[in-house]
Image 1: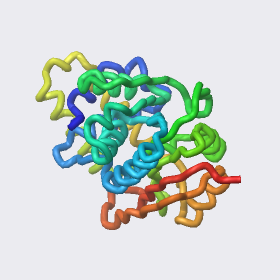
Image 2 (image 1 turned 90 degrees about the horizontal axis):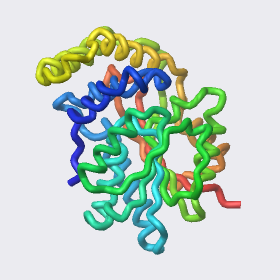
Image 3 (image 1 turned 60 degrees about the vertical axis):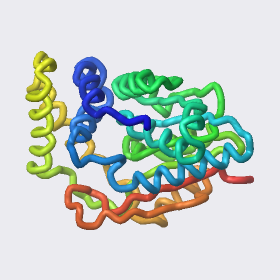
Length: 284
């Protein structure tokens, strides 16, 4: 139910990248190409834990008769939106998923357009806003805020400020569900083999969908290399779980539940663990 269409996402991305993706470092073309791989599932390693904690947050709202107001803060494509819907289906079936009042915010128009087309396809109501999270001024508070891998994209000197702002958008019973990487190494480059694999997926897509032949392939390939290089250049986020906990405490958030996912053996990842957290605004 509410299946994604990675091919449709990539088609949207290829049409919008030249006009819209400079500010975000071309991140979305890299993600869109990667997710066309046959073995690509969900949100990589932590999707099951992420959906489970989203479901607990949605159940908390349902059991108290509270509005199902949800903000997705940063969306690479349709993946986080789909996981929120999946969690709602587990809690209360399709009817529950269709009751969600979802807003998606991102710096770039490209993933917002992917999500709008996805919502139209599944006959879902969706609001979107193009804004940096550091500048966004919501007109209400939310019962659930969903984030996945967004923190590294915040300006390094303002990460705490950004998370404090986002946490302040929760209502009194609100929950923030987030997934972040920890225990990173200091690699700043991805191997040429990994880059070549990503570019190979792009070439395969273009060969199979000749209607996109008008795309400037050299430009897209250059943008993908740029996206990977920029992402790899970000400074490490959290050295360990203690660092992660202290950061969220400083952001006035209490961790209600936490899961840790080990990623040992995957040499393509610059981090060794993912943490999936459900937080609430600190009391008092």
